[in-house]
Image 1: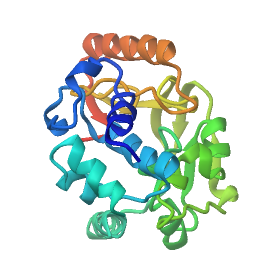
Image 2: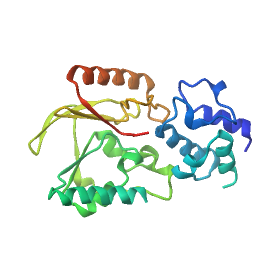
Image 3: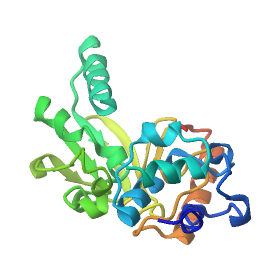
Image 4: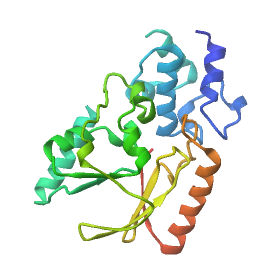
Length: 75
Length: 167
């Protein structure tokens, strides 16, 4: 599991947000497009792409995309 | 735990007001909109579940209702006898006038309900959020068209919006 690949997969969950805005240090809760709907798709991504279950509470506790990467990687 | 709290809150609301739960209207079958349904039907076995044909089918398929992503909370729907399939139309159900709109896009089974001055849009229109159309059964073009239709209706008829998500 590589950080760059994860950031790209994370960015794919967004429709209107330019991929250049989404970096490892991006505070994703602050993105205009962020919502609980995208949160659910991130939970699906963790499960289907990486085989790791994460909860909504764990997702909420992450600040940056890299935090989320580390959460999933260390599961 | 959240699911449990929501069910307790729903039951408390019904009991405190001396009400009877006669019907549940599903906007679509995604797990974040149907978790707790089975538990409610076990407590209120006479309650009807109103939804689209596709939603009724999706209740039984984990890959359609998305319960596969939260394996800790499996969703196993075995209450087919409670389900009432609706079509897009005006309906009178238990004395309640209900306008049912088919609003696919976020997923293919989406319904929106209008009751009086209130509109229940599920995920077809969320005033503060962009449409989400990344699920396998999403259709972005349909979603955008239906969102526009709903916005117009809400404006023309000055409807109160009750959407499916709050953040």
